[in-house]
Length: 229
Image (cartoon, rainbow, N blue to C red; front, side):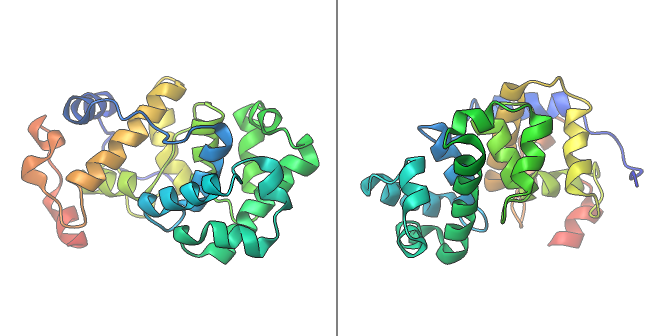
């Protein structure tokens, strides 16, 4: 069910955020596999913890599909311990490497070469991979134009009255994909800029007076702020 809320001025939002923060150069990963691993490990934890886990894997020379897939789960969990929930995430990583090994002969590039319409459902069928993780992989590793929705996007959209609290993941994503050109680089930068907005100004206790959106004439709705603070 669609929500009767005003359409956000997405191009103006993008210009304001880009002017404030500049290019973000996302995703922070050296290889496509590292991007996929990071997307799985970042669930329910800060990125600084993921970076520690990635360094642990790199130190163990385990950042290759063969080693990740062959290692005992206990060893895999120990390598990624800094990311938190390490036993759960080890099983999720193993489910992902099993997909690549069993269906694509261990060649990640073959998986990522699938069109998004095939790749995304395949990723969603993997144990522990939800829409946000799948879309991170499709956008950043496969470089295909899907829009990643996270808590930061939901927060600023709701506060400005552009999306209801009960909107589904797909409804929020469609808000962007239906109004912007299907450009992976644009979606990449836009998502990263929203994260910068959420971390810097649109916090749980927001700094609205300093926000670049307010400076550009896009002020939040006070009633929505009151519901969250």
